[in-house]
Structures are given as structure tokens and as C-alpha cells.
Image 1: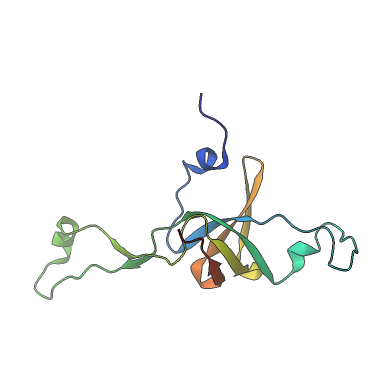
Image 2: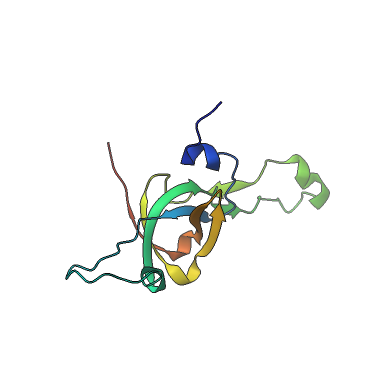
Length: 126
């Protein structure tokens, strides 16, 4: 029986297009000066951060149909190609909250964010 790790739960999910599945970073409950924040204050901020869990294939590139080719023969050509996204699994992403869509999956909170809403990525290089 496989462990119930976050990666095993997400294995069946397929992220579509130029979107990222982001797990929000744990929210801080106290300010630097020591004040305790009520629930929901952190969620109202315009900019959020979280870890990239899954990445979509990217931006689709239209197939190059020649002028002499017939449209019905295009199905026999190559499959759809994509321009890959800059984000990779495990990156820390800082993104705009207004463009994110919140979902709950197996009791965990995630955001689906288009790459255009990502402001900054932090990557651990080996």
C-alpha cells in the first residue's frame, strides 16, 4: 500500500496549458512586532507565495500547415507542440492572488495560477 504523501495524492492530476498548481506557504500568525493576526488576513494580501507542485505543458504552438496542404490531412501530421513554462516543480513562486483559483483536493488547499500571474520564482540549484 503506497504512502499518502502529497506527491502520491497529486500523481493523478494533470495541469492544463500554462497553469501551475501551487501549495500555499504556511501563513504566519504573528507580525514582526508581535501582534497576532486573525484568520484570513494573510489571504487578503495582493501577493502570495507558495511551492509549485505541478506544472502544465506550456503554451501550445499552432501546427505549421503548408499552403498546399489540405486541412483534413493535418490530423496525420505531428501532435501539438508546446513552449515550456519557466516554473519547475519545487520552485517557490510569488504570485498575484487576484488571478489564482483556490481548490481543495484531498483536504489540502491549493491554487491554480496562470504563469502570467507569477511575479518571481526562487529555485534551489544543485
